[in-house]
Amino acid sequence: MTTKQIDYCIELARTESFSRGAENMFVSQPTFSYQIKLLEEEVGFEIFVRNGKGATLTPAGEQFVTFLTNMREEMKRAIEQGQNFSDKYQDNITISLMVRQAIYFLPEAIKDFEKSNPGVQITPLFQYENSIDSFLKNESDIVFALEDQTKQLAGTIVHKLFQSHIYLICAKNDPLATKNLITDEDIYGHTLMVGGGSPALLRSVQQKLISSGKIKYFNSPDHDTTLTNVASGKGICLAPGFLNDHSGQFAWIPYDCDDTFSCVLCTHKADHRQSLDTFIKVLQKLYNEAVAFPL
Image (cartoon, rainbow, N blue to C red; front, side, top):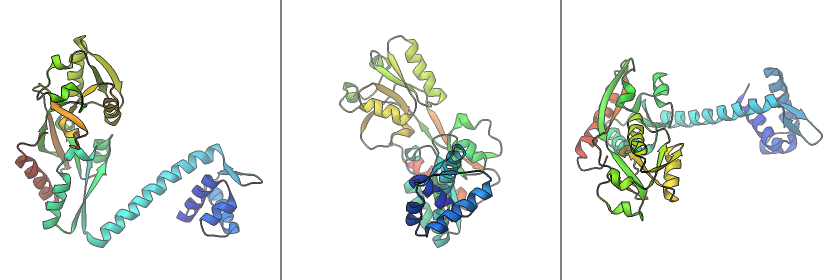
């Protein structure tokens, strides 16, 4: 199976026309049709049902083309990364995190690090879910995590980064936005967004408020949906400070609670690169110096 055959197959699935597909791929129709036929012979099943007007996907073809499309996107990203890497860098460090704002100082750390290590590329990898599993499969060199998530991880080194507090998020025109500190009493009578993949510590705080019987609550599947619900006036939410993008779109007010999230970076014990250790230290230094920064 060649990349051309993959592209032809995806294009035929999109256009359902041999003539249009061939035109879009800048080849003759016989060449286009022949490559589709070769591909079907190689995989051993019919991908398309031919008709007078063109072709439509078989049930097996639908599944196959979905896989090919995903594979082609991954291949495209791999080629682009390879082009970037070969042009300027001799080494690469991949850091996995669920959202960009989780490590607020990451852009500054990359800039500082690459001044003294111009041959080493730092590649962010955004994985909202399963980032630790991906790290354990050696798909990343560093993973951002909560310390509680790392207790059972073998073959890793845990580097402490910062403590993140709990904040209440509300619309900027909400009366709660005028407060400097939010207490449980302030939340009573409101609708609280809960769920959304909340860490265990936050779920515990949410449950305490729910069990009071003094609030309403609304289940939200993820943080972005929660923020959309807050913006639309459906309610308010509690969230760890490391999710704050500091864009000013919402009011983030400290919540009166002693519990904090211990945010860490994990690396592989077998990875002894000096550049990796240097980059971790650059990040730690930035956070240590950000004494007054809300986290």
